[in-house]
Amino acid sequence: MENDPIDAWRQLKTHLESLRRAGLLDVPVGTWDPSDFVEPVARFEAEHEPETILTEVVATVEPSVRIPIKPLETDLIPEVVERKPAPAPNRSARPVRPPAPPVSSMFGTYLKAFENPVTPQNDRLPILKLLAAEVAACERCPELASTRTQTVFDSGTPTARLMFIGEAPGEDEDLQGEPFVGRAGKLVTDMLTKGMGLSRSEVYIANVLKCRPPENRVPTNPEMANCVGYLDRQIDIVRPEFICLLGKTAVTALLQSALPMKSLRQRWFRYRNIPTMVTYHPAYLLRSPSFKKEAWEDLKMLMKEMGIVPPAN
Ligand code: SF4
View 1 (cartoon, rainbow, N blue to C red):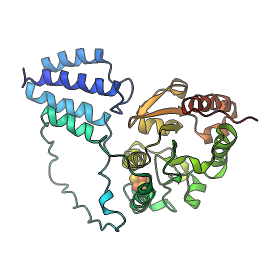
View 2 (view 1 turned 180 degrees about the vertical axis):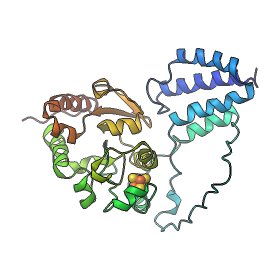
View 3 (view 1 turned 60 degrees about the vertical axis):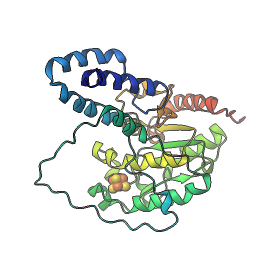
View 4 (view 1 turned 90 degrees about the vertical axis):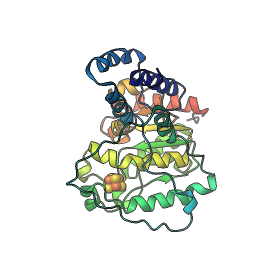
């Protein structure tokens, strides 16, 4: 049955599921229950020609596995990279879907996202600076690119054990070019220093979006899709031991979950094979201070896993 697409599909799904359970794939939690595979297999067998089935598999799997926008160009550092503009798309041409690759190369494609070697600590800052320069010239979201004061890339150390990921720059961040400044930023600093006994310079902080949405509106799905590849590359360069997602936008963009916050807190996920947890966005805590107690419980869970003893008050 080596060439049977249905059998290949079963093997692919089983293999991906085992990889996810082993922590080697950042497939969103909850989407790979093996019992979910039984009915779709029967349906595809009944409704599709065998040769179309692998194409459907690709469409099913691809959105669940995040692959960096492009590989890191570590061999070009520290030279300035001259980038050729991409050729203009031919809008009159009909989109042609590429044929499904053979199963063996599909495994290779998905696993490629996790083949990046660990970036040596001394190389991380110059590589991040190159990436920040690329982001500063980005105009993928025309509205944001035309209204931003500047892009907001990161703060903290590229050798951090812990990475915080928020939503997008606000007005203060847009003006100062640094994530989490202003009132929400002060709360983050307090959470770190008073709660965890860490300084801001000991962690790495970034947002899903690098540009401020006008009037601080919630980022749209296309904007998140445009920008999240930059964040993935930041994560791959820094390789923190732990990730803390601040608020729903970061959850939506990275974990692709629509569950309410109360169902996401106090649990561990894996994103890009890194233990990842979720708590409230500081701006939300400023609007709803009664949830600070729950946020503190989340930080305590994080500190326990990191082996951090809370500072004595
Ligand atoms: S939000 Fe991100 S993808 Fe969109 S224009 Fe800014 S840097 Fe580019």
